[in-house]
Structures are given as C-alpha cells and as structure tokens.
Image (tube, rainbow, N blue to C red; front, side, top):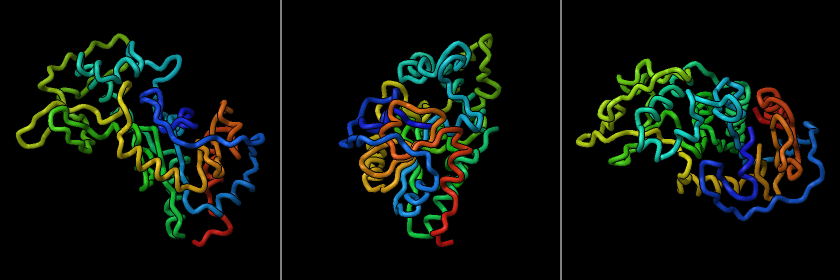
Length: 288
C-alpha cells in the first residue's frame, strides 16, 4: 500500500509530473518491526498522516490494472487514462470508467480502511488529528468513515464538465442510460461506440457539456490546491504512516521491502489489513 514515488520528490506518481518538496530522508539503521516501540511513538503523536496507495484497495478486491494480467479488454490503464484517449474515443474511455464504477459497488472497505477510520474518530476526541492522503480513486476511505481525506488523484464518483468546468459528485448507476450493461472487460467484447451526445452530460442550466471522470490522468498534474493542503499536512505531522521522511518517525506498512525501506524507522511487512489494525488500536494512554 505504499506510494513509492512520494519519497524525497513530493506527492507524485507515474500519472503526474514530479513536485519537489524540501525533505531529505535521514540516514537510519535497519528499520524496526517492534510493534511495542512503534506504539510508544503512536501514543505521543498529535498529528498523524497516513499515506495510502493501491495495495490497501487491492485487499478489498479492487482491480489495480497493473502488472501482468492488468488489462481491461486489450488495454492497460495507461492506454485509456489520458486526455488524448478521451479526445479520440470518449465512448471507449467512459466504458472503462463505467466498468470501474460498477465494480466498486460490490467492494467493501477492508480491516485496514476501518482501522484508519476508527483511529481518526477516536483520536479526534483526544484533540489529536489523523489525515489520510490517498492515491486511490475508489472512495473506500470515505465509505469506511474517514472524514479528513485528500484524494490526490480524484475520484471515480466525481465528474468534471469539459465546457463549464463544474466538478460534481455522481453516484448514479449507470451514470447515463447509454452505458447501462456496457463496459464488459472480456477481450472479445465489442466497443459500444456510443454517440458523444449520449455520453454523460453536464446538468448545469444552459451547459450540457460533455463530462469526464474527475481523476488525474497520465500527463496531467495534481490539483494545486490539494497539493498545497497536503504539503501543509505533511509539514505539521509528527508521525507518518506509510511513506515520507523529514526527521519524524515514519512507519512503512507494505507487502515487501522497497528501496526506500532503509530510510524509515519502522517497517511492518504483510497485508495491511492484518498489520494496520493492531498498530492503530486503542493504546493504554488513550482517553476513551
């Protein structure tokens, strides 16, 4: 569940241009997997930042469209998640995102999402804060109950008008009548070839512009306002899970070690649905 590209070069991924932060990862000894020691740091922290990536959603069965077998029909995400692909074939791109929206209706937050949300709720009563900074666009953190969430890559369930620019939540199923029953991922499925006037349209008065998914596509930059807010959160945090480093304790929860692991104080290996709940559970110093 790690956002590997966050380390020392800012909140970015292969979808976005690099954004430089001023942090430098301190040289550290081999990271500890001592949960008791981590819990002491956790008990002292007033502002906790939790950074999540695709791994936390994968444990809920959400397709990542990465690596071998990560295809929708004959395409990988990077083939369709681009402004040029949408300009060339908006029907095909909307089929892909309609499929992803419909898949999410059968997925539920897993123990990692729930542990983070419960931790935020519990600590807020103690005057402490928890912020979630996520690469994921599936809204599972919201559905788990997290309130303070920055979705740096947008959301499957928001649209943006290509004409007026309005961003709006949209949980319709299907998002438009023409997409009902479409989006079959089988490689033999035929493209729907939906006329552009029947694709999702803006409902703003006198607009009727073509809508696009409100997600950050390959070749696009992160929203500047969200990036500024996230930088502010990371500057004030005194404990960070999963990735980042600026002299504060950092704990990595990941399925495996990465090149960045050596820079962290703590490393807990395994599925985050198993490793996170005990790490974020009620501490003996908590005021309930």
